[in-house]
Length: 367
Image 1 (cartoon, rainbow, N blue to C red):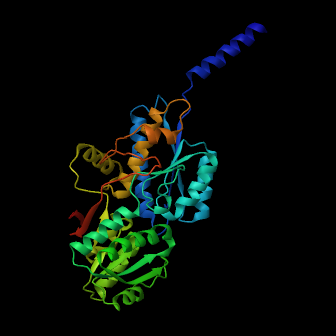
Image 2 (tube, rainbow, N blue to C red; image 1 turned 90 degrees about the horizontal axis):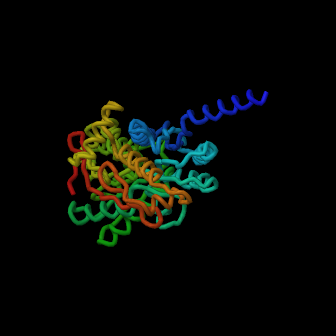
Image 3 (cartoon, rainbow, N blue to C red; image 1 turned 45 degrees about the vertical axis):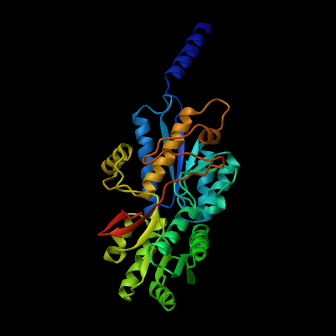
């Protein structure tokens, strides 16, 4: 009886010793359905590629990485619910969300569970300079809006501008407009109209364009997603508007040209992604992404890849007794696809921004 017990115990110990180590779980949250699915899908792809590459290299300390992907449906209640599910699944971190409107509900659930959130694309200034569990790999709206305002006033001859912004993502759009207004009016420009709308199936783009055009501005600014920006540009073309058209980095997905066609040629956008970057790290990323997903990467893809890479590298550098947030803040820089990723003491990051225009169906850097 005793010998049998010993053999059973030894067998259990051997089985435990031979069992693979528990995987490291990483969560992703983004809008994978609906009107901004292009952003969420591109982010998920960048996240997935980074994890697949890490697993192919042996994981982290011999542990594989397991991914859990959640759709926030661009609904705050759903975003909070799926974040709670990821916390319950004991993820090491959450990559996401992809829009500013979802940031606060995700962060609330993650904070309650002590889980760090690293966003690829949330730029709302409402989360800047806060000592919390929210980090991001890009600059806030002031960087892109300020660059856009300065360029159009000083180099593009724009003195008056009419604006339309999507109130469904107000955490981003209202902040972007405030930052743009501050720089543009400070230089001597005038904003002649500020019109809000809620993106949806019944959005009357023609009526909104007419409200903008009646003010006779030098330029039209669309603070909206790729889908809505494409629709506004098409309406501007149909109405034979001669004004310059300006978008925002939120719209700078590859779907913009697919939806807008020739109407978006000449559209200006400030963004952080240079698709013509010749650096070897980016070329390797671009080739791997195109091979895996049969399409070129967009800005959300590279940002999600960078957010995931920074997280995985930090987990690898993490020491006993040190939180993941502490490692991310103190043990950088981390290697990204286009530039090193450095977080300040609040988890905010700076990223070079460019003024681009759409030319022959491509984003071209002009400054």
